Image (cartoon, rainbow, N blue to C red; front, top):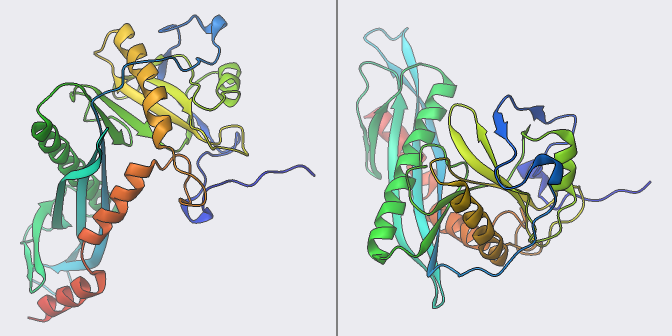
Length: 313
């Protein structure tokens, strides 16, 4: 029996589902943005002018406690969560890497009409109202607030640089952030198939630092996209492959230029197995930023005790 071992820690799942598990997307796909579908083949990296700075944006979240918000009668209660979340930016230049921006927030998320901020001796959880009283709505509300903090962090970091020769790399899809200039979304995992089977084969044959041709796709929002294989991925056919996105309001030529830039830029920051359990997709700057942000969230046990004490008060 011939087999290979997925490089990702099983605790994170896998970087890609197998062919049977991936769902076929209903997205509208235009395949002829850069090349005719009949001429699709891996695109080799080519020399490009490097940006003066590469800004990596990411965020982390943690649920500190689940609450029940009681109405006038003790028999009626609404679900709530108290969460800590943070976002930041790593700025990589020829002089090294810095973290110019970090923002930390705490919030209580609930649909309860009588809800109020939760004040504890370890800090205040600001009230964030959601529309429905169910766990999915609470999680989506938290994710929406985290996305807003990521946008704030990116804006502040760019203001501190004061030049327009940077590249902004957002961990995750670009949705809701397409208006940011010189920005790309970086998606580590694959749960859906956007390409026809024969073109998926082109992606599976990519060598390190090679990419697919650019295509355009639309679901509830439009964007350009391409697949890129990072160095170090081994094993499954799509090991080390990421999907990269940019805004649909760019010209096709500008999207192709960003795709070429991503080959030269992102591959330099690919992680390695002995340092990261999600290598190579979890880029070094993003992995370091996640660790720093989790430290900024504070001690979870202390916050939990503070919430219990506030509930008894």
